[in-house]
Length: 371
Image (cartoon, rainbow, N blue to C red; front, side, top):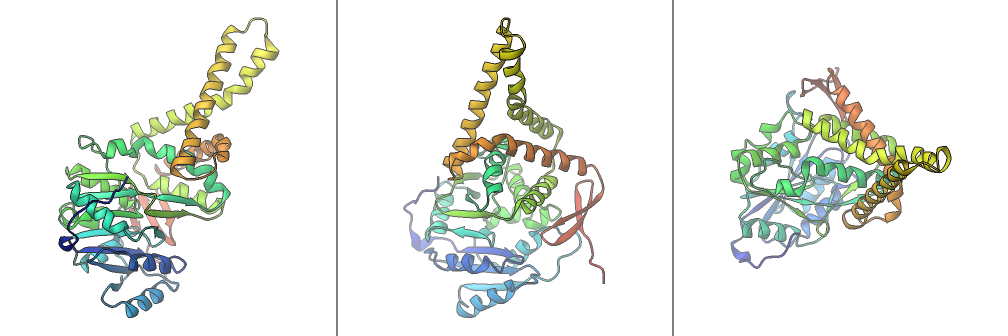
């Protein structure tokens, strides 16, 4: 967990907070207000309007007028065809940044503490890190996100466990896109966002490059400092889930791990009614093996529900009640994974945050809009 370190605040390096925003008129006010309340003594805010068609740019410029010494607004021109996602906007922010440390922040991120940047930078310096990412508090705003997120959070540990990321010998790297820090030297050494311009999940790809090039990266718990929203109705969440999964470059090992987790999590629930039937109805007089099977199923179910309950209580700060929906969540997520893996083998187009991309052999390019 992020902790406050006692360091000389007079010698803290300049920080550039880069905020890319695409159609974020409902969130950008809160984001910028929270940033302006930060107690870090030497930082600038680079707000990048990523070709928004709503009032995002207008709101940004109103903040710049009121805070010209603190906020610089960049209107990113239309991105090149071979750039995907928000990497282009982040790169434009970098080109205009003057800090020694970059903080990349999503526009819908809420910084809960006025000392968040001070704490994060202090930790980065004290631990002699090259990059740092904080696991946020996830705010689930509807019933579907509350049901699915605990299991989705569990699935994420398959590949992006903090034990792997914080292990210098392990090459696994990952950034939570809503909040991460990286030194200018490290960022430029790995090729900036230009090196991941074909990646829609650019934060994961960027974190991977940090570890691959043997820079020091650490993931910490930051729920007390940073929060992000999981909003929308079921169809919105479902589409977002499928698209997110579809963008991840799965290898054969990842697919086998997902299938294994799917089997382990759902098998006890699927087999349970058959075990009950065999023990109490079909052959109650000769059911030693069936009783063992039933006992194993019940133990597995208790363990699964317990894991989900822990995720709900400790990491998502939700009622343990939603743990009973674990089988539903696992089914939905697994279908999304399977659907996305099948689609990833085909050519086609993918829609993402109002933009359309051509997908071919894991390489994405922007579809030029019709004139």
